[in-house]
Length: 184
Image 1 (cartoon, rainbow, N blue to C red):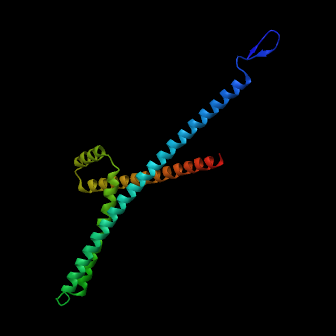
Image 2 (image 1 turned 120 degrees about the vertical axis):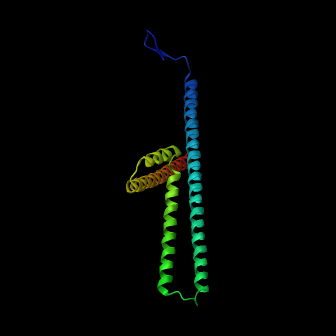
């Protein structure tokens, strides 16, 4: 708008043209917001798909470990049944069974360590291996390995927690978009 000497204001655009421009600007803003929300939704869906894929992989590994344990238990049971008439005592059998159980537990915890190492870059693993090679004392080396293993497990748990929180946050944003769309 322009002020003239007489104090009257004139505009190069008519009121109708100004309203059209305002409507176009508003429409552009809404379109941009819809595109932004669509991108956020796509990202949320992608994150959810990745999480589902990771969970399925973990489930497959867990099932494989359980099947292997069940198979081993079945073999052990068959061996025990075939030796029922043998000279083995109950204490020997109990000790043998206890040994098998402790091996299974060790294998399950080994699986956790392997899962934690999946989150660690290969360069970091190599650097740690070189650092371990320098340590001469076996107890110190074992302590360093255990400490690093626990550190990697903690990193894995934090990463899983971060991913869950991110997925929850994105889900909440998608819900906001849905409610906004329903209101409009």
